[in-house]
Image (cartoon, rainbow, N blue to C red):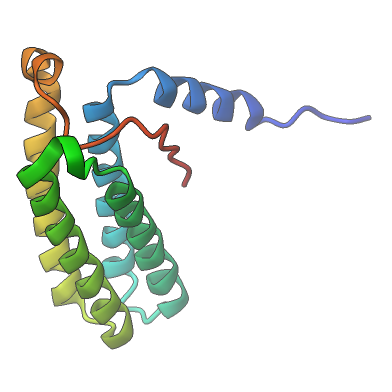
Amino acid sequence: MLRANPYANQNAYKANEISTVSQTRLIVMLYEGAIRFLKIASENMTPRKYDLVNNNIIKAQDIITELMISLNIEEGKEVANNLLSVYVYVKKRLLEANMKKDTEIIKEVIGHLEQLKSAWDELDRNKEFSDKTSSPVRNTGISITG
């Protein structure tokens, strides 16, 4: 007897949740995911579970790449260019953190991501701003999967 996949409804629910949120909320969710993965990486440095460290840093790098790809340089102009510079710096630091297995670099990156998340969180709460202002991010249909 075949059993139904118990995660099928959960995955469908997650996909529906993601497809119905605002663009700014989606960006906040991406930051949350990157921060979560980096905290997992940092926690696994001490017992030297470097496979987990590596995998979670790579997941965070993938999220940063998605954020970079979603930038709308033409409409976002200076803000989008500044974000791109931050993302390039963050990716470079994550590469260093992974190579050196350096928790301090991970903490630094988490700090940067938390500041960015806070700013986007504020934008998400201020719907009037997001409705009237051209976004530094284009609507790309980013998907989030763990």
